[in-house]
Image (cartoon, rainbow, N blue to C red; front, side, top):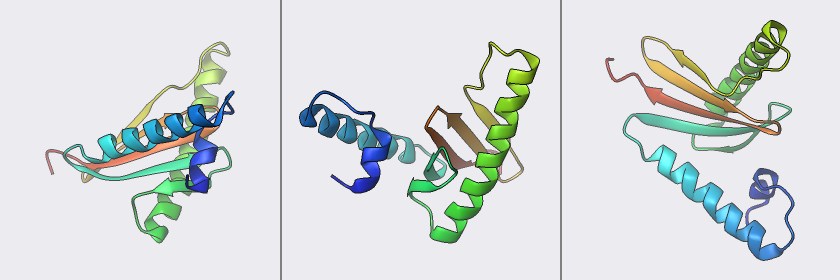
Length: 118
């Protein structure tokens, strides 16, 4: 079991459950990566540090840092508007790419795909 997967999996009652969950996480990331147009996936921890990626190091660090900051600001804005609300998904579309962000309490999933029209 790769060490980074332990961060993706909440504590459980047994080792088998953790291993099953690790396999599910890995399978889900592979499934996302296999979609047409997806150029990369990044999992970032709550501190903005990438813990799993399919991109090169410099691209990963750039996306992780900038998207983590943007997502934190978007989450803060949503909560300022309504304190009982929370950001669930953020989609950013540019001429070349579409960046999809799924924030959670401990992690942020970033998926980058080519815009279908470019």
